Image 1 (cartoon, one colour):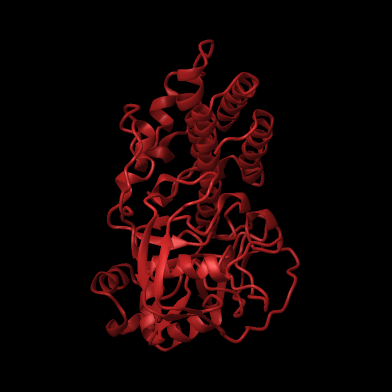
Image 2 (cartoon, rainbow, N blue to C red; image 1 turned 45 degrees about the vertical axis):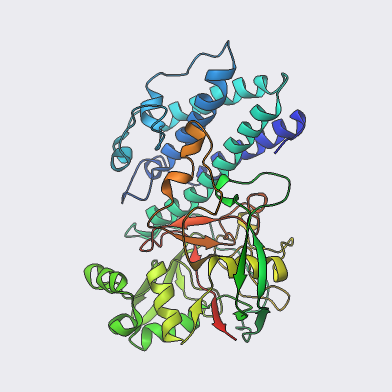
Length: 417
């Protein structure tokens, strides 16, 4: 994606400042903990996103740049084998040093150097690499929301991240409507101009049978019926690996749901522990749970390609689309003019995360960004209430292992014609 340098500089400053704003409500202690392997300490995110710009932009392309601290490459490299050694993921919570203040100094140092660097002449290749760094930081901003919610939501006091705000719109669950996809041959993948990740490439044709897609997400109330009907106790709904996961981990409800005094409550970034709003989309479910619920309803999840076609035909992004820009930080009740194909929660598909036909990973360290993870994961689509609006599109392919659910993940159902 080629942008004018002035626009790129403004975008750089805006995105970099947002990461700090996300962490502003946290205590110093909140920045350091790592409760499980999938959660990274917030201060690690602040350091890693800074290291990305230092390592891939400044160090190789700015002759006058001097690294802030040569040890930081070891601390903040995530998974780039091309770049060198790194702290293993499980040990990120052991980094009591450098301090949060020191990492803020690191960010300021790199930001100043890069803002000066952006005043110079940039070619298309370098501009595109800087844009990748910005998109990378937006991904980590979303991960920050997930990780902060995990950290605070597993604190015995369930502290709020931000105060509860007044929500607009109806609280009534809208009746399910249906969006039809006709049988036919469709183009899949990114075929426009502008930024995209390499896993969206390999534009190809795919044949779809006709199907019917529900025009809103599955709600908490609908999912609660599954819970109360013994859905977590009946092996018939579950894939074998999912059933083992349920039994081994004693899973009884979506993540962040709590049964207190015979009432179901949910932890939210806004307001802490609150009664479940039945009309809002269910969130924090694994692929195993989404698939089991679909079977219980005698329906199914969309394929990855059905989702993309449905989104291109029926999805739209508006000023009311529930992304992180609205700062609700929770899924919202479906409105009559909104099919919820963008925002609210990432939607599990039945598609395995594999390369498209003709896919070829880029050369060098950037080639490690997506391609090497194309195994044992499932694709999610559409973005969430923690996604930046400028970061999403109909061809965006998110991916997670099927047991994970600390992200804002939900369910949309489909059935065959």
